[in-house]
Length: 198
Length: 319
Image 1 (cartoon, rainbow over the protein chains, first blue to last red):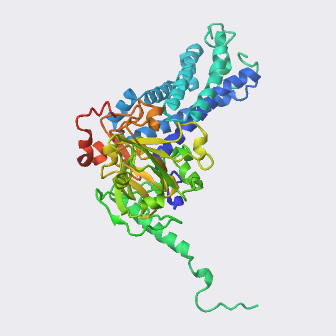
Image 2: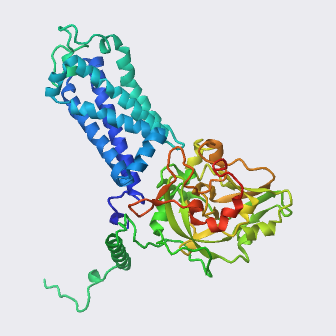
Image 3: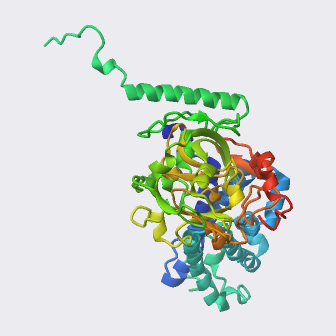
């Protein structure tokens, strides 16, 4: 009678949906964060135009995951949700990671990039690394005994994060102060000819 | 060429028995789901009636005490959503992997502070035992729950036979550990073998049963065949599965989850909505097959029977 179930979500469909949306969010986040380093390491920047879209998909799946938690898991039980966020470190981390994605999604349009100015926009969007780290903590801390999968994902996240930190002089330095070094591909989702900051 | 249509019913038009049965089951399931929705129960995958395949019906099962009239979880739910890490970490792994466990013959080693230590054959232990159907709530520490019609008998009947000495204060239960039959034990997720324990008075309590069946049929491996514990007022992990050893001890046994994460899993592990687990609120639970959470009851609703076992104990400390 398996087929008669909602898809094949098993005996606890809400748990299954929670897990699936979580995995999708993390995978898309890793994909988003991989695009810049691929360009940096290979000077192949053809993926850059897709980054904004992949980033927004990450946010979309994050929303699905969060909505699953709020609606399906707790059915708007605000009191219980607040308690969860405050008292349970893995929920605190996950909530933080999700909330930090909101300003990034909101400022993802070209108009917002222009309004903020590329430097401020870039600094703001460094939050993605904080969000991703919170997401990795969320994943690791929810594990009961088996850390293999969250460990693998945290390890994969460490790669783009490590590359970013290694690039520090460029990444956290006075980006944009020098008008000739705008690292345009970081700002606009368009292909660039000169290989950007690489 | 003229092919004449034979009179009567063509064999192709006769519904296969299995299809017929499935259809009956489907209709029943659909009806159940409809009723569930109509009454606001929102039967998520529930409402179906499923039966064990290849399991033997257990004769002479008498109705037991402490029952509940809550809706039973389906056989399918109970046998496909299991925490039995020896067969894998995913809830569905045990139902996929547990068939490899050899449950016949089965012996239980009884030792420690008892007058009659021995390796007992399971069939000898079960001779003269009256099997009862016990419909119990099962509350997992992960904040989900089920209602399960177990077939079993009080653990006390066996303990009386083993004659514990005056020094026996606890009973330690050990689950089988067979790397060739249990893929999960090849990895050190827990310190195998799985060990659980009870204070002797808890073990002697009439609610504490040894389970050999489910839904009137012999237990499936993923549910802990051939014999497992069930203490309905404790979180599920206390109820050790596929038991191969019972040791009577003076000291409190070192149990598997308590050793793995002492701040998360206590020795007592009584269902207690006022003591939260670091990762799960224990105030409420999701009954498998239902949409809305429900409040968790102290001692899983068995307080009248068991609260006196813990008189004077600080259950926040002895969680």
